Image (tube, rainbow, N blue to C red):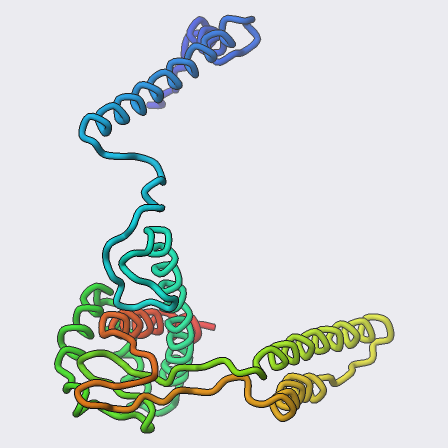
Length: 290
């Protein structure tokens, strides 16, 4: 027994086409204008009602609050900030901190992900199983749980600054965070940056020249020694002539805390470590799959 689909009545189709502005004339067009007008009126009523309620409760709306004084401090800031600064400054501080976490996290996640992927592809049975276990465990644990684990179970259990863990005598890890050398710009920084940009431009021109020679004459030109020489030689020559681009202020323990250097608070360290290890598990699988 076959079931045939019933088509809608012709009168209904004609009315629907007229309502949607079909060939039936101006009636559909007028209905669409009325429909849009009703939507605009409803939106206006919602906004006006919300504004009236906010004013009745003495709550200001808009972005004017960004010029008000924040009145609170931020523990981790890449730029000078105090509680007397505006909310705009707070927003900028948060944006820079987010970018810093992203850059550091991308670097370590990529590095760790490639190492774990190589471990999974290794013929060594133990290394392959450890790498596989890392991927399966880290990928299936919620990211929030990992952040809390690193912060509460690992960093909070570290010793105080006087008994901090020293790494190469320049990095110090304690329950107050990670203290690292602080880079200080020297007069040789500007020539160094110019040398790097010139080297990159020259390398791109060499690559373009080699590709043109390959397409025009079929001749393959080896340019990588020149590219490596430019990218290393020009910045090195700039550093030899104008001096080092940056120097580092090494932190020194004085009393119960460190003096000098830059301090990364425990919350920042926990966030970077958790994001790096979590993302590295996915990168490892992507690299392993090719």
